[in-house]
Image (cartoon, rainbow, N blue to C red; front, side, top):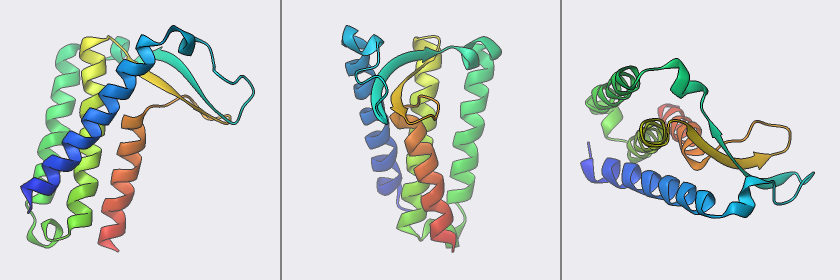
Length: 140
């Protein structure tokens, strides 16, 4: 397994996620949708559902389980030889870490991308889905 690929993916996703959330939180105009009725807009909300449902211990245990599972899967020789698979797992782990940081520091996940009638989401959510898609694609 290439630890460098994994660490680059995790660090890149984590940095992009946390910097984008900091930027959105610093702009009071994002408290309201920038383009009401538009298909894509920026609207900052803090999703506190997960923070209410889980304790800090539960959040940390969940993150540790995700990280351990990712490392276990990457320890399999056939999977760890695929850079696409490693990058996908790194993106997923970076996204999960970004949302865990939000839950622990902000007591809720900062979401800000409003896309059509879907729920509002953030870059960590995108990285989780895209990372899992890459990992599955690498298996095919």
